[in-house]
Length: 102
Image 1 (cartoon, rainbow, N blue to C red):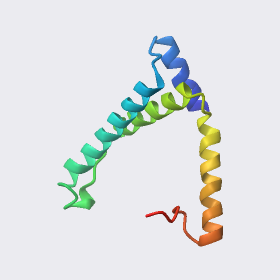
Image 2 (cartoon, rainbow, N blue to C red):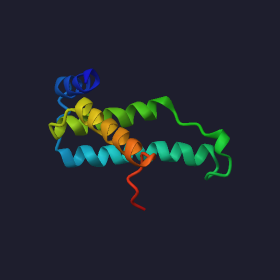
Image 3 (cartoon, helix red, strand yellow):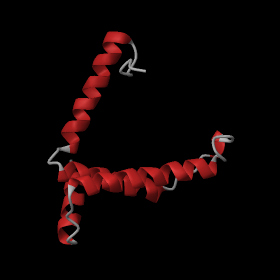
Image 4 (cartoon, helix red, strand yellow):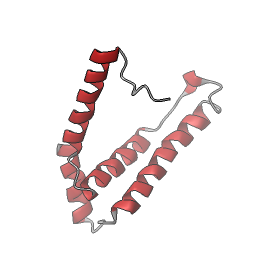
């Protein structure tokens, strides 16, 4: 995935290499910022039409996710392809993409 390569190069060029566990914690923090945007803009879900998540927060989370993949030596493109195939199979077999686990 081109984007994963871009993130890996940026991390290397800027001496930002870090332990995968730290990368995961950073990812969770970035996802939390998306959740905070959603919480604030919708007044805790009371006004879902007012949802406003900032584009840069999505970018931060994507950067963090691709950095996690790179730190774990996971090809993000292949992982996404695997997941899409898993969802396709579930839809073919059950008519629903969910795992069925509740």
